[in-house]
Length: 260
Image (cartoon, rainbow, N blue to C red; front, side, top):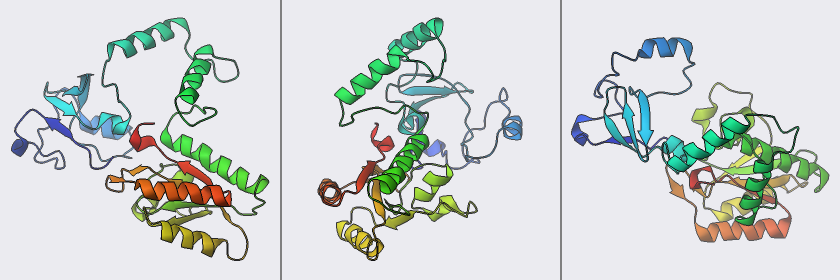
């Protein structure tokens, strides 16, 4: 998330990761220019080359140690080089690598069973990123709108300042114009409302469904990350759940920022 940083054991006054001029330069053993020549500039990178990690600490190519508050953009809850994870990955790669979903994979089924037993889900859909998970949810919502609600052009309501991914559909679902700039024409079928505002949400549904039913789903983050670390109001989310139950609208929760 944009507000996360790495925190060094060095005095804070001597380290400003937001400025390449203030930060200690990348070591001579690593050449940023060569990296940038071959890797597309899809991210504004800090002038640090990370080489290894252990637990919640990482070390750069200068040997400098940091506390890792970024955690892979909130995805590495177990930290780096956790012994049990290393053991599990090593055991699996020695046994079987990748065989695709054309076949039954017992470990995949076991994980899905655990996930459904410990969540509200009935089944699990395995994918590679939050954007891909959200793409799947968007497709399911559109199909539901067509087949179950009889909607010709299903609409999905999302929140201002949200972030749902960088694919074309999830970028459109993202309620931040700065991420959408120069990627138009965007995908149709999305409408934005203020976050944590139940009256605005009700008004949007009333407007969209005034002449014919259009709203198939509401897509929200329980906590906005790219929007500035804004927690969802529990009362608001209960009201949204009740609204969806009353109307047959699907509720999609993008839980990447809260660790799901």
